Image 1 (tube, each protein chain N blue to C red):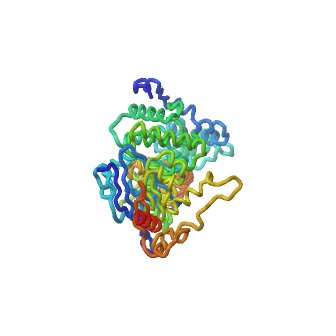
Image 2: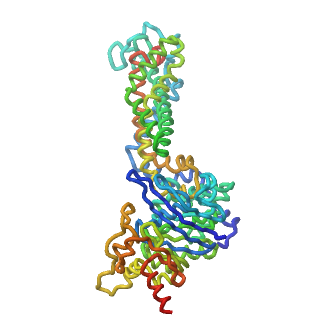
Image 3: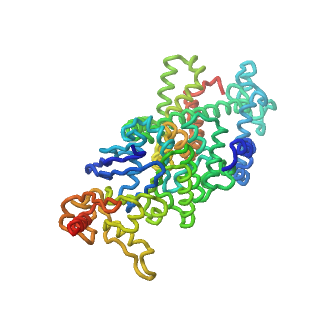
Length: 266
Length: 328
């Protein structure tokens, strides 16, 4: 108690973020978990492949000059009648499959991650509000979620995308396809998040630390965002991993139906 | 003008089955630096009283009558925004369970700094400095390291110290401690109580100590309130209440202390249990369990009778006082 503030400040060595990370529990347990390391390596590989597609892909699938219809439907290297130029063969329009996959990974990851971020944003906002304030706001928002949930994602996506295509023409659609997909998948799946967040908030709301925060004179908004939200993160992370995969599958199936990414893009 | 004066406070919980009065006609006052104990069984309304003072009752409970005058303002009538400048800043509260009161996902430092920054315009570094000084005041070893630790890395006693440090952050003038030592083991209890007492004395901070431990009350407080079924039944200087309890319920509480019983004997207990707030008997709420019950106890609510420095709400005490006066 005899120390002056200046002396205390001197003793106070604030560790850098890197140092803190190096000492953290997260890194330590990650290092011990082989499955996690392999999974992380695979994930990094995908991201790197997607990011460096223009550098490593032998062909550019967006460049019509590089596509020759005469090269169409060449089988991959390990089969007969293969062509040395195309390691994994070509598709029906003569595009190199390896390059197409590399470029396609970019779009899939982009749509997957962005759609989930959108879901998460809407879901957390609504779930947190519903759970924290309760009462009528809660009932109203959760009924909205029920309504949204009663339409299957595919149905919403097909209707919206088909109407959009019909109304604005295929050309404009081709330009906006990626945003439309993110938007549609994002909006169709938000109740997943809203429900999970609301359920966790309901159980966290009555814990004493929330009372303590109120006693300290914090505003509701601050209690919601800095005190309750971090405590709901673990279930959120779990559903996020599933949702990214779901979003990618939705995108693929929509594309298969002719309502996703236009054929001219991988 | 008193520092804190609670007048005829009444709290009602609006339930589907009708309104339930959790607190009726509670009045007391506290001077700056004075320490008050509120004693009673579970469900007597002790914690409700604490929350009502801070105007923090959550639905369906609300203050239906009375006022809480604190430094000239009626806390029951302030807007939520005005109330926020008082909570944590002028009046701090310490909760029962140190395991639960700290947010598990924020470090000790983050929680302390956040509290400081919510009430004052202050830089991160200055806030850290103040936080560390407070941690040192509550005798936490190597506070710099603690700042970066999460609550689950600390022991119960340590956490309760941190909670006290957080309560002291804004230099409040009143601390409400709701059973601050119930969740701790006995040796730590004594340490924490000593610490709290020291800090209150040296900073001239008022303390409202809510507990069911009469030993703690007699050690720490100057004034005590005994509550039963939402009402004050005895109020006065702690020494008088402990040494010469007037109300049969208070006497029962004191007799029930383990120290009052010889080894090998059963502890004295007050037979029966407190009535639920929905079924409080007519007259004195304690009458079904009282050894000295009279007819009047079942009909009318007893009024306060002065007895020494205490006020006691009991018909029997009144009758005895009247008799004594006649004999004089």
